[in-house]
Image 1 (cartoon, rainbow, N blue to C red):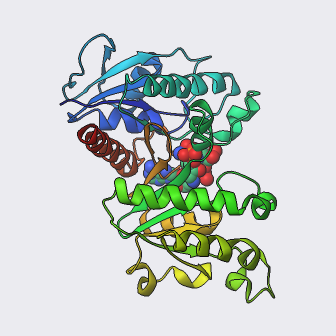
Image 2 (cartoon, protein in one colour):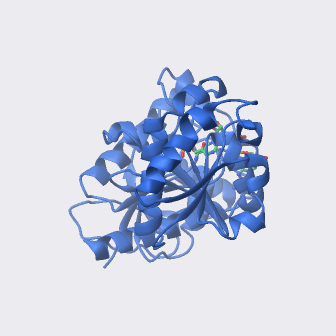
Length: 330
Ligand SMILES: NC(=O)C1=CN([C@@H]2O[C@H](COP(=O)(O)OP(=O)(O)OC[C@H]3O[C@@H](n4cnc5c(N)ncnc54)[C@H](O)[C@@H]3O)[C@@H](O)[C@H]2O)C=CC1
Ligand SMILES: NCC(=O)COP(=O)(O)O
């Protein structure tokens, strides 16, 4: 069975188009359909000294595999010409259009998954569109109240209770309800997507030293500990709250299936230090499969041909794998 995957290369001035063009140089075991402006891809390929053959995507045809050097294209017109490495808010709507189409066509079953390249959150907002990240955008588009950001590399999976919010709002956002939903989604998807029968999840505290018995903050006593007790009584295996500065060592990680961090920069720096370029971002809890890269737009590398394809490649491979598993279980 041929799986059909949507790919959004993301910010047109960044490295997303470069990586997509490089990855299309070999044949994939799935139909990859890039949702982007074809002229942009042609121009970027020329700059990189590569050829790219774009095949018009027709969703009335059965999924088929493109030969090496080719990729299927769902055309979306850019707002304006792209200067490599230079952001332009005139293209903010274009980026969002590619994501909207990917979302709609995953919801209606045209695609079995979406793999996203990096977007620049700032320039989309500068274009007058409120946007904090793919994770939140796809949740909103699919009317999903709670989704979970999980990044995975060899030997470490990190999920987040809160995602793209200012640090000043984090404490308020960690409620019994949110923590319960995130832990439940994480536990469920570790079982179903990763085949772990009874996931062992290490849960970080929020404050230094997990609050030091309430002397350095009380969120652990007021919210985190009671929620973990509640969920463990229902059969989960959540360990914590643990001091985040000491739990990231092999002694603990080797016994764990995932770490649940309270906020973006508590968990992701460790993950990226361990596996930058070799990690995948997976959104759990969505009604469709979405994977992504572990890096940003890297404007400094766009058009140079030096950007590493590792994470984008892994994101596509993971999406294909998850899509096959989902198809088999239906
Ligand atoms: N999935 C997404 O859409 C993500 C988007 N971003 C966005 O990217 C923008 C830029 O963020 P930064 O913090 O500067 O992170 P960045 O990942 O774009 O760049 C950080 C450093 O890593 C290098 N780098 C990044 N990707 C690389 C690759 N594939 N190969 C080799 N080197 C690479 C860059 O050259 C730079 O030195 C921001 O607007 C941010 O929101 C950041 C992370 C994920
Ligand atoms: N650091 C990961 C990240 O910010 C990716 O966010 P998203 O766009 O995948 O929601």
